[in-house]
Length: 310
Ligand code: NAP
Image 1 (tube, rainbow, N blue to C red):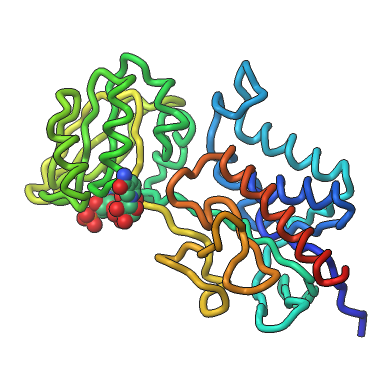
Image 2 (cartoon, protein in one colour):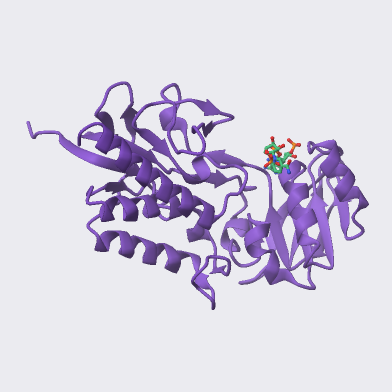
């Protein structure tokens, strides 16, 4: 039987947090192994223009930015594999990490598996993602100056996005599937007081309309069954996120599904296991904040290895 490979640093995930952790760990001569996962590159692979990542004054495409990050990590001998971790054992060090039948051991583990924005599940939504359909107002709101927008959802995220989008849009319509909001009272008060925001209750989007770029949506009233088409230049889907932590349940402390870290570090409840990016952070959720945390995680892992004589 082949010997089980043991690494100083194994990184799970390859969004901005994972690739920045890889860059830093590689430059510290730790030869990190990155298991990129199925959705390699993370949420930036689903966007087009990124104008708020510093260093790119003329904007950069999301997938191009991720390709650059990957190349930069690889240049310093990070090993990146298009594999997904299917099981981990965090009960003993070095930790067990499996990719199917292939077992590896990790002296430190950095979890950067991210979070996935929930989607409505429409084919048209998928097709127009990055072309008027967005899951991030902070990222994309700027592109909708002077236009009319739809926001889907009835929670705090939906209202926060709607309020933010009124800085750019002439009109924002919140489309909610029920007749009452789940959002906190304070956010409801703010949204109701905003002249640019209106609400469509008991309503779902049946189809996002547009050929190459969002032009509107076909809406359905779930009480009456009535359908109608409205014009809109963008559809912001704000129906929540799911942190990608199923693999770690019962092994590392989670809160609402997100990994808990001992701030200001990236240490989790398990010594030697660090976490960074959207799998931890449900507040900021930006590429730059994820990258920053990835850097912290690599430094934390490096110090941990040093303290343990590696
Ligand atoms: P959330 O509270 O789970 O709300 C999700 C909303 O999307 C709900 O209104 C839900 O409708 C709707 N929804 C879910 N699936 C849908 C679907 N398939 N089609 C149409 N609508 C759908 O998620 P969130 O708003 O992202 O908030 C998550 C957590 O973060 C909350 O605890 C929230 O308070 C917190 N948060 C706080 C702030 C803030 O304080 N500023 C900002 C953002 C988030 P139903 O209501 O019918 O279930």
